[in-house]
Image (tube, rainbow, N blue to C red; front, side):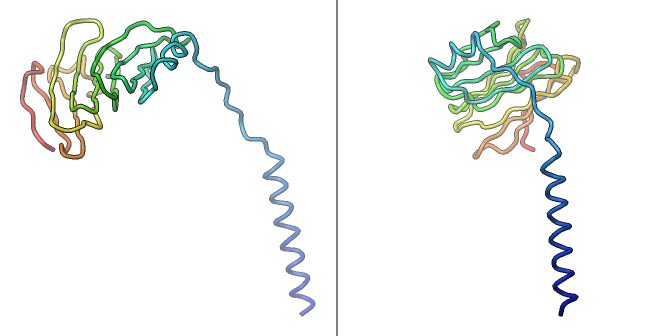
Length: 168
């Protein structure tokens, strides 16, 4: 019986030593800086609904259906009026030259940020996801996937964006 008590004491001491070691190890701290400039201006008038990050810029979608491209300091570089309702998701290709956007009113748009290539589709229900192929700009077969509650994943592809659409 005395041995069991001693073992318990040793176990408690060991666990206390381990917890003290864990507490003494500091977790790495994340360095960050709040976005300001244009972001402050946007958020005074609207609420952010989604955001995606690229090496070159940030894309911010809002509840009033706008998409803003921001530089890394938060300055607005471009603004797109996509829809009168909430933007659900934004997708960018790897090069940052094409953007896919879907919204609560069923609109899906994929377009070039620097040239006129564009695709629009409207579904009869909210579209929750859109994903542009990472190599959209380099591919001869432009591809993206979109979906929602009533619309199971739909893949669109072809030489031009007027091409075929099929359910996955």
